[in-house]
Amino acid sequence: MDYSNCSRAQLLERIDELEMLNKELLTQKEQEVRLDFAWSGNLGHWYLNLKTGKIVFNPLKVTALGYRSDELPEQISYSFFTDKLHPNDYAVVMAAMRQNMEGKADVYECEYRIQARDGSWKWFYDRGKVTQRDAAGKAEFAAGIVFDITEKKERALQLEHENKLLEAENVTDALTRIKNRRAVLAQLESWIHEVRHNSQPISIAMFDIDRFKTVNDSKGHVFGDQVLQVTANIIAGNIRVQDVVGRYGGEEFLVVFPNTDQASAGLVCERIRARIEAYPFAEGLKITISGGIAEYRGEAVTAFIDRADQKLYQAKESGRNRIAM
Image (cartoon, rainbow, N blue to C red; front, side, top):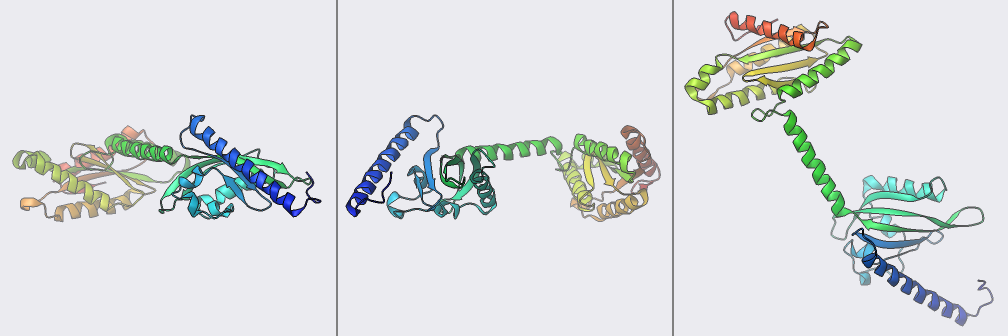
């Protein structure tokens, strides 16, 4: 419609008509959101004038952020929302919108965090598209719909956290909190697979607490458990980040040293042995460990571990409290 010949009174009347129509349409859309959509959390439609930057939206979108309608300015620009985007999500949202505006994507669609009035973060799922373009194809108007998915996201994050805890429990020894036998063997097999391709050295050490049965028999299993925990902590605290220690069984511990030759692994193991010997266990009890070290020679994993175990046996036979290579 051409308004160039309209009088001021006619223009004001037309504006009033459009505002009334807009209000009615928004009311109808809000009723649709509340009654007709199965997906709870729907906050309704939005309409963005890309020429002016002004946005029209269902009031649910701002009430979900903790604002009252009477707190908002009469005209709200798109920046009212974009300024509240989480810093880690801003670029993603802008890129998605830009792709649609430039005609490189059929729709604008993304999930993002937006800051509520109380400082908390809400998760929104937003989907829309450019609906009007000028003769040159430049985007002029966009429309879409937005959902509050905060509860859904929080459930998903909680489930992810619980799964990580469950996964950690599946690979962790319950008493010592280091890796269990299955986990340390899986790590060893993975590294051996790499070694077969890159020819890097890998060494292992098998540790065993000396005369541990005597400790259990004389001091009880509670004391014995404490010895196991302290020993595991000392071993874990004296190896590198890339090394792995696991409880192999009973009072035995397996340490894997990737990219390490036998001599270098021996230096670390000797340090561990000395620190356990010097540790002030309760009741003045002296605890020692013996260890056997082996460097990988291309054999099967079981044979590799058996070589370290044979060295451990030699250390025991030689008087205990020593490392054999």
